[in-house]
Amino acid sequence: MIEAVGLTKRYGPKTAVEDLSFTVRPGIVTGFLGPNGAGKSTTMRMLLGLDAPTAGHATVNGRRYADHPAPLREVGAMLEARAVHTGRSAWNHLAALAATHGLPMRRVDEVVDLVGLHEVARKRAGAFSLGMGQRLGIASALLGDPATVILDEPVNGLDPEGILWIRNLMKSLAAEGRTVLVSSHLMSEMALTAEHLIVVGRGRLIADTSVAEFTSRASVGQAVRVRTPDSVRLGELLREQPGVVVTPDQDSADVFDVSGADSEQIGRLAALNQLVLFELTPHQASLEEAFMELTKDAVEYQTGTARTGTAQRTADERVKETAA
Ligand SMILES: Nc1ncnc2c1ncn2[C@@H]1O[C@H](COP(=O)(O)OP(=O)(O)OP(=O)(O)O)[C@@H](O)[C@H]1O
Image (cartoon, rainbow, N blue to C red; front, side, top):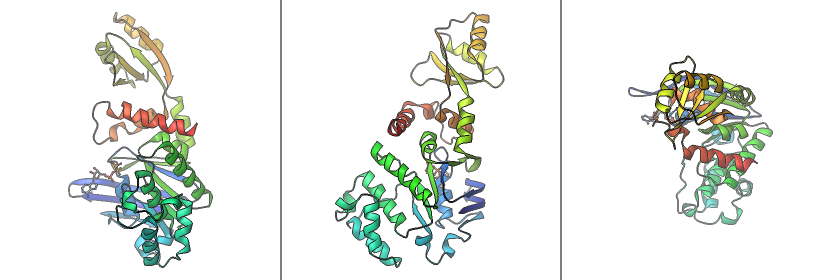
C-alpha cells in the first residue's frame, strides 16, 4: 500500500507537484497517468525518498521509504530512462546490487530468468538494446522480491512483444498480491493494463477512478467529424455554442472534430449560415481522446494539435494491435 498525503514539490518558483493525495492498493495494477510534465516522475521520486517533498509526505506500507530497514525488499522501482550503461555484465550488475543489499545470489539467477535475460546475462549491459535495458531495470526492481513495485513509463520505446511482456508481468505481480504503480502518458496502454487510475495534470490530481468507470464515461462521448471548405467560419460558429469543443485535424485544414454537438445541430448551423458541408461523420470518442479532453487544460507544452497528432495515434494503435 502506498499513501501520498498532500505531496507538494517546488523547484524555486516552479511547482512540479501540488497537494497530491492518493492511495495505491495491493492486488491490482494502478496506472499513474498524465501528460508530459504533469509531475509523475517527481511524485515517484518523492515516494522513493529520492526527492524531499516541500510539503506533505508519502509512505509505503505505513513507513517512509527511508525508514524501511531493507528498502529493496520492500519497494522495487524502475525510474524512466534509468540507464545501466556500464561495462559490467547484466549478471554482475545484479550481483553487485544483491551483495550491497544482503540478498542471496540465487535471487540473481531467479530474476534473470524471470525477465528473460538468461541468454545475454553475461554480456556487457552497456551494449544492451533499449528493451533489454528495460528488462534489466525490471530485474533490478524485482531483486528484493518487493511487496511494492513502482515503474516509471516502462513501455516507452519498446517493441510490441516487449510491451505485451511488461503488461503481463505487471498483471501477474499484482495477482500475487503486490502493490503495483506504473506511470504512463498513454491512456490506451493503461486501459489494457491497469484496473485503477490516478490522473494528474500540472502537478494536481485530476481523477482517481477505476478504469472501468473511466471507460464507460468515455465511451458515452460522441464526436462528429466535419469536412467543409468553410472550416474557419463553421469552426468559429460552433465554438460560440455552449459546451462545444472543436479540434482541428492535423493533416487537413478542411477537417475538424466536434464534441458537444451532434450531426443534426452542425448540419442546421451550416445551412442557416449557407456554408457548404462535404462530410458529417459521427464516431465514438476514443479513450485517448477522452483522456486528452480531461487533461487538455493541464498540458504543459501544448503545440497546437500536437498531442492528437500522428505520432501519438500511431503509438496508440500499435498498443491496440499488440493487445488483439
Ligand atoms: N529538478 C528540477 N528542477 C526544476 N524543475 C523540475 C525539476 N524536475 C522536474 N521539474 C519540472 O517539474 C514538472 C514536472 O516534471 P516531471 O518530470 O515530474 O513530470 P512527468 O509527468 O514525469 O513528465 P514526463 O512524462 O515528461 O517525464 C515539469 O514542469 C518539470 O520541468
